[in-house]
Length: 106
Length: 144
Image (tube, rainbow over all chains, first blue to last red):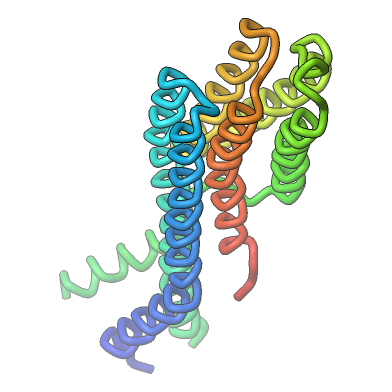
């Protein structure tokens, strides 16, 4: 039995594609959720400030919080992306291991 | 021939490797995050329900300390995990924000409706990335 490297690479690529496709929607979904909740939060903060329900100093501190929240959101998205990449990479390695395993058994 | 040897070398190398870039998913931690985020939200809901005269820091001290202890425990758990860089930033930001909100209440004795609503929204903003990150780790826990 010949080891067909091109066929194995094609199968590895297909395994990566399958893993990423389904999970990528999750990253997009999370990014949209973050964006929507930021919009509502900023609207709330602005309305509270305009109605003089919070003082200027307090308002500016909450805006400073937004920077930290954004930092957390970006790290959260990074985790999900890495998680997807990890699963895809391992699926490709599994394909390779399987192909070589079959070859060794012969 | 040398090409085949190099290919065989890489294949052998790959045989013993699995890529690990993120920590393992932990269902108990996800539950603890949900529970503590809920307690944090409930703290502000209760404050809004109580009149301004009842909103003293002392009245809520116990709840504040319970939530802070839970956040510290989540931080400690994340500190002990491998590949934890992103999670530590997220949990650290949450911890800092909660401590700041607690200190503000303590120093000002009470909070206005507006301050409570603003804190409630901001704290939810700090919790969400942590919750979604832990859920994102589930991708590697599932078979498909």
